[in-house]
Amino acid sequence: GCANVYSMLYKQNEGSYLAGVYAAAMTTQELDGMNTEAVIGSVGGQEIPVILDFMVGYEQGARDTDPDIQVLRQFADSWDDPAKGKELAKAQYSQGADIVFQIAGGTGQGVFEAAVEDGKYAIGVDSDQATIFAATDPAQAEVILTSVEKRVGESLFLILKQTVDGTAKYGTSSILGL
Image (cartoon, rainbow, N blue to C red; front, top):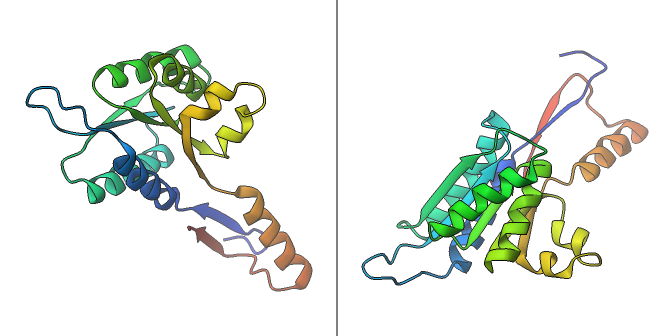
């Protein structure tokens, strides 16, 4: 690495694992005939390594909680298409999911809209998305059960603090998790 660069990567699969545990524990099983399988879903912006890392953690946490759970996974191929996010979430809700994890930037706004319309739930990403909507759209805030946060600001504060106090290890990298 470069002597004047400090690289931070994130283990987003760890926080997503906890979201999967939570979703599997919170889902309500629809007992319609012979189908007693719990279903949850996820909508990603694009099928790229960082988004797949979120999804793999989410799916593993859900399966460790309920080995029989079905986890739906779809990609919008867009970060700024709420209509596509809404369409994908509604499709997952119609397949029995009652919670959809959105990892799709602006496209994820549509996931929240679908949750409100369909009386279902969603999980946010990157920041506490329920608090973002609490004042302006309380109905939307109420359907966001939790959010997987990276807390990038805190990690930047950490390296700046280390730079100031002389303990920063420039030329190296860290992978930050829970």
